[in-house]
Image 1 (spheres, rainbow, N blue to C red):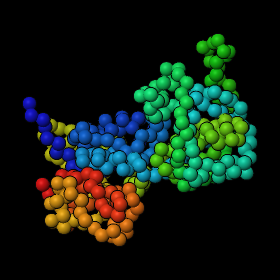
Image 2: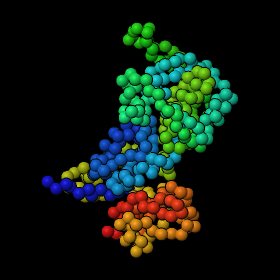
Image 3: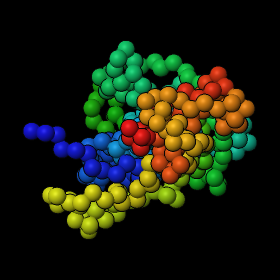
Image 4: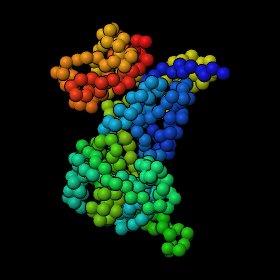
Length: 342
């Protein structure tokens, strides 16, 4: 049987991921909304987290690598007084020191030390591979996982509002040999923060490191991503609304017409909002369709950005033909899309 052609319209959809779902769960549901299996996401969010999840549809999945590499912004809540196995609320307590009052001057000093270019040890329960296996899988199997520190950049790390002192309960084993658990009340301090950071940053690790610096332990209790690259929460859609709109249009029916996915940002618009762009002449477009990068003088190339930066190449009608990269004061072809003349 011949493979059914993919008639989906390529582009980006911003989903406000709800808590309790994995990023892959969202992708699975968006495949049904978009009428194609060619759907991916640009940057994993933990099940506990909410906020901007960039969904690529069709050829726009080829933009996701570059979107994932972009900077990100988060609002989060850090709880001081308890350290957890996962550095967030999904784990088990490993130390319960409690915290009845937070020294704000010491907190600010600790936060300041984590701004700028730093080396960060990722959270043990993460998707980083160690000897071919995910760190979280090794941790679940009871293996000790020691991850190497990696360079990241914290552009902003600010406290939002006043700390909140409260009592919380945490379950611990009655003794070292027992599987029976008991809940104990603990005084904790919750602090809301805003973080603007490079790709690869673990906000859970920032919480863990602050707790260690202040000597009371800490973990993340809430995380909301507000920006990925140039895409912000203001443009994000509720998944349930996208599903309802698709249902209302009858697109779940056999033989339904191909329509843009609800909330779709067309691939041309998405690319030019993410990257600087150039316009190809008809002759350049023809050559580019075979992978030949357009020629520009060095001054024009360097005005577009820095070495390694990605450039969108569009034709005179504004259709995205592909992506280029700046290399040695010239342009190098990265991807050619089907919008280019064949």
